[in-house]
Amino acid sequence: MITLLCGFESFICRMLSVLFMPAGSCSVLGLHLCFGGAYSLCPTGRTSCSTMADDKDVLRDVWFGRIPTCFTLNPDEVTEREAEAYYLLLPRVSYLPVVTDKVKKHFLKVMRAEDVEEMWFEYEGTPLKWHYPIGVLFDLHASNTVLPWNITVHFKNFPDQDLLHCLSNSIVEAHFMSSIKEADALKHKSQVVNDMQKKDHKQLWMGLQNDKFDQFWAMNRKLMEYPTEDGGFRYIPFRIYQTLSDRPFIQKLFRPVSPDCNVHTLGDLLKEMYPDALTNDGEQKRYQVLIHGIEPLLETPLQWLSEHLSHPDNFLHICVVPVPTD
Amino acid sequence: MSCSVLDEEQFRLSCQLLLQRSDQLGDGWSWEAVQGSEEGYLRKTALRSVPSDWGPLHDQKGFSSHPQPQTLCDSTGHEKEEQDPAASTGSDFLRAEEEDAGSYTVTNSSSLVLQYEYHILFSCSYGAPVLYFRAFTLEGRSLALEEMWSTIHPNYRLCLQNCPLNAISQQEHPLLGQPFFFFHPCRTEEFMGPVLQAAPDQGRPVNYVLSWLSVVGPVVGLDVPLQYCTALHSTKPD
Image 1 (cartoon, chains in turn orange, yellow):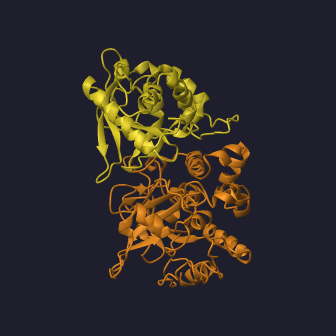
Image 2 (cartoon, rainbow over the protein chains, first blue to last red):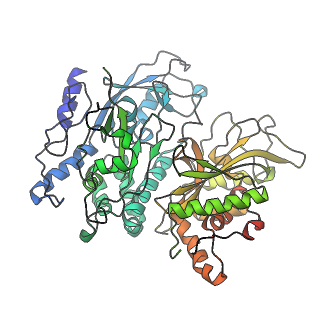
Image 3 (spheres, rainbow over the protein chains, first blue to last red):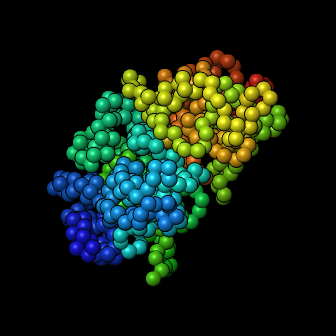
């Protein structure tokens, strides 16, 4: 297990200056990802040409982020013999129903058909929302716990007041495409996504489903373009998640550049949308602001984050979690 | 309004006007505010009787293995491959089958009584109102998507099948976090556009939310009485 974690961490973890904090707890057992390469930002807010390669590296690091997970069958399920735990590396950017066919097959081997209804997952009593990207679920619920992530598998008593049903991958596809369209409505008034052919939409989904970075980005790069004179997208597609209140997320209109041409940062976004997440001078830090398991510097331009740290659904998913008290 | 996109302030104003009229008519709408902010949504509950010959509601024992109706919004307008929506919304539902008397209430006139809850929220991404709704049997069991389809009038069902852009799908309520059904808002601008364009000729301002509701509401059993349209106008200059 330790070997696995070392390999996993070195695969992901590199050094990065300026934009990303080295995320202090980047230890072998920690799950924070560090991004690598020297990255410099010109005062105008544009990246210099020599760092274009590094930008692509960030895209790859995001895409190939993995979370070591251990699936255990709910002890109350009726089985014909004892079920062994199942280990899997989950892609941060994908969705549970897409990547857990093997988990289902593994547990079905020890169950009778009549004891099997719709599969669902739970972590420490919380049903996991399959329509959130896996990395978001982890950051929100388990970010400061020891790996592997322990998820409980259920085949009965589907909590239909908490979870959406998902009886086929076409439902996941519909949700994914719906997010992409919504993101483009915010970025480009839907013009780019509407100009795409149906087969282009399919390519985005197939790229995600089959873990094909190049296939996905061949199409997704169009959704990341903008007229140079605008300086960025019309609005930034983002969602801020927290677990302290019932409200599942905060999503509002926010521009990447102010009317007087100031580049908005992550800090500006939080100040406007969720000021409690920020630490005032002299105060002790209460919250971590996580994107793909790392804490980007609050000075990072939001436009850059949107282009490089969005999920495949084109949204920036931001998790605000309490600082661990250990 | 010069375009068919709504902003949040206009949405709130339209809702307040609708609310005033609802109070006068006793139509049951209320405004639910998000704690500590101006944000909120309109809410209404109602009992609704659905003729049982529109299609049987599925028995709860054992979930259906039918693929869900395709809910993908294809805004290119290109021909879509249907994911066999007929399996869930078509002839199966219109066949008269033996009822499982245990799982729902059957009234004398052979119809089913359901408890509906309707929420009208604002989508800032699409600049449009969105209808979220859910339904329960009188025993408190919530309806699944396929059952929801069988509560929609067969005529509307055909339209929605052919036009998945306005299809109903399950979605997380953005403020409450619970599963609801909703009409995807991506095409609202299309049907509201002509309404708003014609408005100046009508000589009176249009209440966006009311007009929009009169289009989408009836599909899910939410009727908008004509009395709403009398003496309902904004005091703000348009």
